[in-house]
Length: 84
View 1 (tube, rainbow, N blue to C red):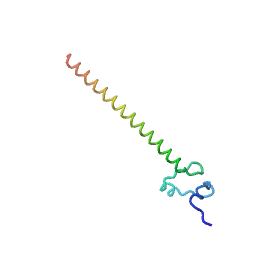
View 2: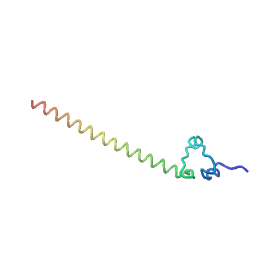
View 3: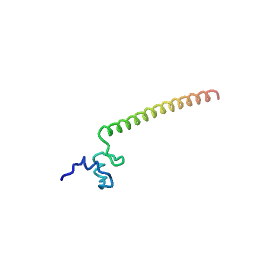
View 4: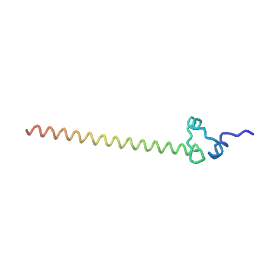
């Protein structure tokens, strides 16, 4: 009796040893005893992309703020030099 990978994936971790290399190569992550199905994997990846995008936006905003503060400090420095 042949067991398909899908049927084998439904077994608990205790019932069959988990081949970490096989799971990593196929991009599966384990949650408890079940593999993520494709739609769950897509949702997880989309959430990670959203977080990454939000992080990049935040970093760009922080960079603009720092550049503005640097320019203001330069101008203030020029004003102080001109008063001396």
